[in-house]
Image (cartoon, rainbow, N blue to C red; front, side):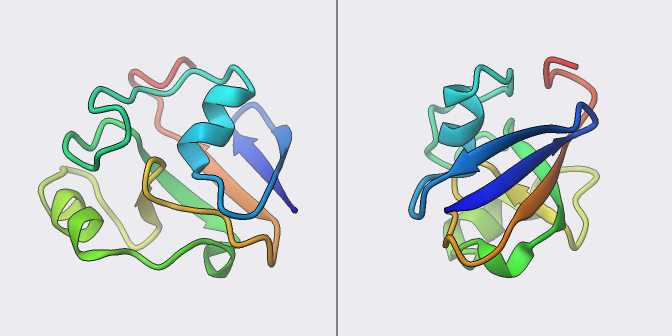
Amino acid sequence: MSVLTVMPSGKTIDVAEGVTLLAALLGAEIGIPHKCEGQAKCGSCHIFVQEGRKGLSKIAREENERLDAIVGVGSKSRLACQAKVLGTENIKIELLGFGSGI
C-alpha cells in the first residue's frame, strides 16, 4: 500500500499495489481528464510525478510514444492511466491546471 499525495490540493489517498494512478484518482472522486479510457492514446491524463517515481511501474513503449507527442512533457511526466503503483514507496503527483478539475 502506498500513500498518494495529489497536488496542488494536498489530498492523500491510500493506493493498493497494481492500481493505476488514474483508477486511484477517479476512485477518490478527483477529476482528471481521461478521454481514451486508459488506453494511452490521447495523453489527456498527463501528470507530473514530483516524488516516488521508483514506486511506479516503468514507462512502456506505448506510453513513451504518447508522451513524445505532448507539449510540455518533462522528466517527471507520466500518463496516469499507465503508471501502476508498486506499493514500495509513497508518491506525490501534480495535476496540471488546465482541464484537471482544479
